[in-house]
Length: 167
Image (cartoon, rainbow, N blue to C red; front, side, top):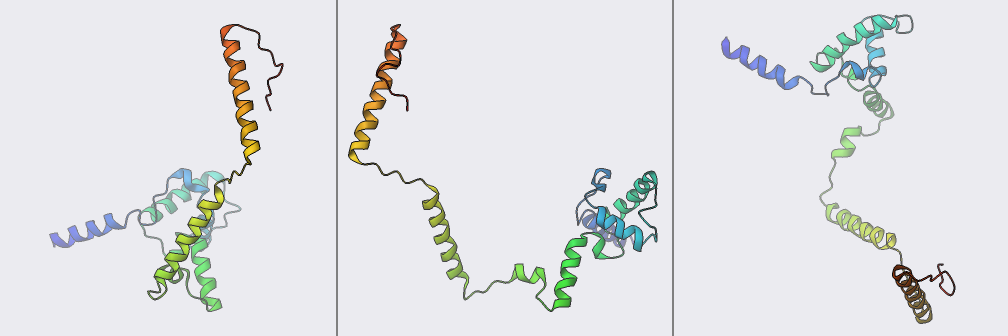
């Protein structure tokens, strides 16, 4: 009997927080799940419950959520459950099945395509600088003038902006 208690305790500790751990601050993050829980489990209308009572009920919701004792899986993530139900109704593959499918015949080809796309993105994101020889000469000249004017200013001379381009 003692080993059964240990097994139950270990199983319960593994289940705690399976879907995350809620705190009272998460009341607005899980509002849709909480309201569905209020209507379906507690048979209460969330629109007429005072704010103080809402917080008290949320503590119960939070305990059930954290200990993974909700009566239905939809109370953990309502949008995910609704998406799954929509896919079932429409006869589409379930969202989980879409993510886990790996076609071994196509896998290497897909990897090659992804790598090629990444290389294209890296090449296209780098700016291409093409200057003619005369433009490079002009750029060197302007840079040299700036350096000279800065050197004169540091030595205490009034270089001014005469003849020095700052464009």
